Image 1 (cartoon, rainbow, N blue to C red):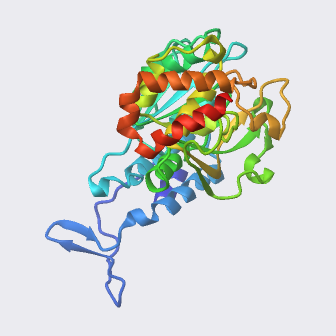
Image 2: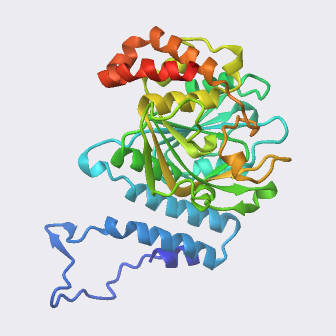
Image 3: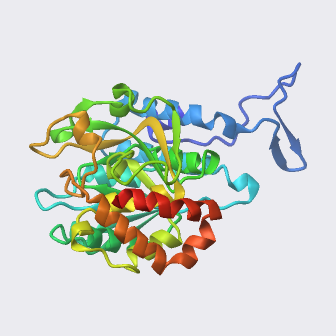
Length: 369
């Protein structure tokens, strides 16, 4: 029935009864109790396969223009009704924020915005630069669009801070212009954080795209041999500040909390040497207070800036919002982290065990040695 609806674009309802349902053997999968129709099998169990089929079916039907938009909107509404695993346990789905950043050299590509709008997870707050204009939220989508004043000439910390404070939520992803998230990005990251190891930040493998979103390489880290396990947990304080274990910023989902709130509130001001390494420092803070969980699946497309080399070295090093590689100063970061800890020790004591506090000072001394 859904495939016929997508192919024809309309439905006709007939009041006459044209068929009967004959029960024989074990084929009774539903019954009427009073006036209520009660299925004996949960149709939601078939929902993922059905949705996958319908997405392929839209392409096979060759729809375009408004017909395609209507078909995608229909599938999206069905999807949002079925992908709420917490509702059966009377739990609310965690809210997530996707913050998009503009660039000085080119406008925010519509594909980046569309990818953020079409997430299979709900609810979502989309934080978008005001200069981009109003964002058209699809009908029926549980998405809230919020504007913030992004300015590419500002220090990176200030850009991140403005986006972070523009909207709340339990999780936040920072996506620069040109990068795109798969439709399952939020859903899969949040699910891993809920059902896997608790972590301050999850990061996934990436596919690398060039100009005009042309695919250059898929599954970059899996094919490099760097990420061998489907899920790899890196606990806090297990590596030094000079070791980068993450992925480009668009492939990372941060779990919000008091420590990140204080980081962006400027509880301990950043020295000039760290102001343009803010995304690297944010990852380090999340890593060494909450841990990192790496996913091997590709869930994000990372755009290669013009003039950059398509190499493992580029993707395996910290980069800024402009895509340029950073050379962060571990010593300055360690000194700042020590000051941040002393300024906010009450918050650290609430969320971290005594063993972490015992290990923190020796680990910090090793970073400044």
